[in-house]
Length: 188
Image 1 (cartoon, rainbow, N blue to C red):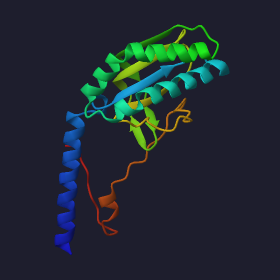
Image 2: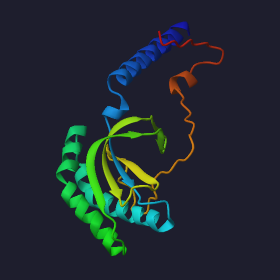
Image 3: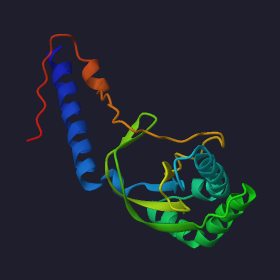
């Protein structure tokens, strides 16, 4: 029984060490490419327009971004498609009866901490395709283009968090240890 516990603890330490090394050497900000759509204002009409633009842009990019293999390919694809994306966004804005300008850029932008399903994206600078409608003073919609986490149904209303959310983290192999076994975790 002692050998099993020792083996599990060694495995746990290897996994934690590997996770720590990976986290330190490849932060999340360097491995995702986001889509960020900012509404003209917080009016109901402008928020609905933002969702209409988002739906068309996600539909436009869905197949190509789903096939991308790395972040740099995704960034280059977005950069290459800026004219097409801008044209599609303008088309949607005009069809909805508005005359707002639209700005489409690829760059590095600050994002607050956000949740996407069970994933928590820490605050920081992220590479993103940003679509700014009109004055860009409204609530925003965001998702992750690479890896393709936002290739969801067209009816998705996106994520909007005005308050901080708590994330619960559990380590399954610790849950499997027999009751009474104490494990001390240290970052040093």
